[in-house]
Every structure is written in structure tokens, then in C-alpha cells.
Length: 341
Image (cartoon, rainbow, N blue to C red; front, top):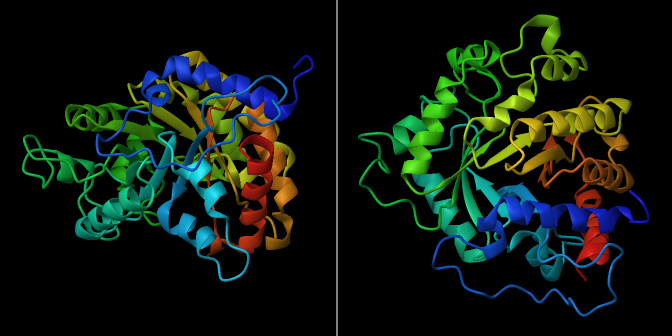
């Protein structure tokens, strides 16, 4: 890392991402986005390694973001929220766990109104119908006969479609989709990418680390070794625009740095042009008191050092582990002071 600081190295790494993904550098997105972003004070004292043109890629659930900005005590300041999430590299997400189409479309419009420079993202846990809710998956929404199928306008503000296969009973991913992925059959993913690209939208692939794994191979922490041995980093080369590695359950343990380093390297070897993000924010295998702001910052710095293009910010309040909202607010506040203020 020569004499670069961690923050400075992140700035340097992200410039490489801008070259690889011109849509990010140009701020391309829905034409209606207006330049109302909070100023970034770029004439402040320079950071080690030089200035960057934008924050890193950020992925965050819309409801999670609202829990930070609307916290009754010590909410995330508007300047910090806008710096990280009101920018084209921010994928603000809704639709998880088979949410109803009408509800999701309403949330996409709300995201677009609240963060007009962001990239509103529709998350699907399934290509076919969601096993738990019966809501249509990517095929049912964007395929022939779907409400946003060929020839139909896209939902207002929508920029990115996310395929997040996890498990049949956990998130509604049909078992057949999980089994296909574990067998190395990527035909469903490629079909989803083709449908989404035909609609002029970007595609984010973010499979759970253990999707489709059987028995002990998918248990914690064996799933990280299985992921590497199955070369799941090669899944970054299926034609998607973004690839995300769900590393968050290893956070705060020795497994995190080893897995993230190997997983990013594997993914970037397969598709150097595809921005690779990693998950941080929660480790449900540890007691709630384990997740602290310093642990989040350490995970951030580790991933930056390993060349991550950005982060899926897993803000979990009352889900898996009851981490206080202040832990996440403090993390973004400190990071903003280092990189944006």
C-alpha cells in the first residue's frame, strides 16, 4: 500500500472503477434526476492518495436507510445521507422477500423523490414466482405478459434490477433455482440478465454465500471455503453490471479478511470490468454486542484494501441481531468526516 492511508487507497481504487464503469463516472441514470446533491466540499484539505470524484458504490435497503435518517435519537445528518446515498453510485433497494408489485413500485417512486440522484433498485429473490408470497419474480414482471414486459414502460425512476437468490424458506427463492446455482447451471441468471438489459436497466447479482449448498458444505463457516472451492467468483462474469459478495456474516471474525480477500480476487479475475461490492453490517452468529462501529470500520478498511468497489450496507435493527441504530449512524458519520466532509 506504499504510503497511502486506508481512506486514500479507497479513493484510488474507486477511480479504477469509474474507468471500468463509465455510467458511474458520468452519473448516468434516469433522465429526470436533478442535480440537487449536497456539496461535497472538495476544496477541503486533500486526503492522502488524492481526491475522488464520487463516493463508493453503496447498496442499502430503503427502509433501512429511513431507519437511520428518521431515528428518534441521533439520526444520520442530511449532509452525510446525501453524500453516500443521493448519488448515482448508490443503489437504494426495495422489493425483498417477494414484496407485492404495487407496493414495490410505490417505494421506487418514493426513493426517486427522496434521493433523485440515486439509482432506485428492485430486489427480487426469485426469477420465477416467490415461493413464500407468490409474487412474480423477474420473469413475471419483465417477461412477456408481465406488467413491465417487452413494450411496456419501466416503473418511474427504476435504474437497477437485483437478483438475490438465497433460500426457499428464508427468502422465497424456489428450490429449483437454488439447486441449479449449486450445480453450476447459470441459465436462469443469464435469462434474467437478458430480460433486464432488454429493458434498458442495469443488473446486480447478489447471491447469498450459501445459496444451494447442501449439508455441512453450507454451514458456518464452511460455506466460505465451499464458495472459494466452487469458484463462485466466476459468477461475476455472467453479463451482469454489478456483483456483490455476501460476506457480512463473517464480520468481526478471522474468517472475514481471508474470505473477502480471496473472493474479491476470484471475482475480479473472472470479470475485471465488473464492480464487486461486499456485504458489511451484521454478523448474526455473534451476540448483538459484538457489532460495533469500530468493527464496521475495520470491515470497511479490510475490503477497501482488497479492492472492493463498494459495499452492501446491511443495517439490521431487530432482525437477526438487535444492533442499536447508533452503531450504524456513528459509522456513516465517521466515514463522512474521513471521506466527504
